[in-house]
Amino acid sequence: MKEINEAMLASLRERVLPSMSAKRFRHTVAVEDMAARLASLYCPEHTNRLRAAALLHDLTKELSLDEQISLCDELGISVTDFDRLSPKTLHARTAAAKILLEYEDFSDPMIVDAVRWHTTGRADMTLAEKLLYLADYIDLSRTFENCVILRRYFFGADPEKLDITGREVLLRDTLLLSFDMTIRDLLSEGALIAPDTVNARDALLLEKKRTDA
Image (cartoon, rainbow, N blue to C red; front, side, top):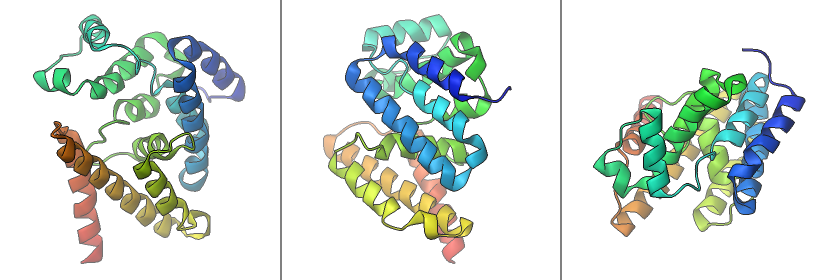
């Protein structure tokens, strides 16, 4: 895949704008900014790929459930009872599929997979998947209590001053905290919990326990 430059990102920003409300677009641009900030700490060479993933991550977020299901049918994505009862997870799958079909310049597996897993996470997430997931959670447009807590937790550790090992531990522990928060909230609401979210949390916790042993 050719390198993604500023002109391509500017064009992509304009292209996704019509599919989003003003509020959703502000969030999207804020996630792009946070993704760039996180990439500078962990993988500067992939900054523009993560920015592109951020611009595409909520491409289908504001579709209704019926529209999501119709799009899934069109794209050949199977829809389960879980999906119907937990529709917020569908947009990650439909957005990833649309990238492959309609945004060929950005169909890099790193971008597609980061978008695919930015909502639920999964076991053994790649670095790009982790960074987009976190950027979506703690971007500066987010004011929910958990988002504020998580943002303070991460940046309060002064990641710029840590070595790479310290940064990796901070990222792991921040993601663990985020999954714990999400699962706790879903339990309190009596909502379904995506198995991929549980698997993501358990994989990180197992990694932590092995390291601490």
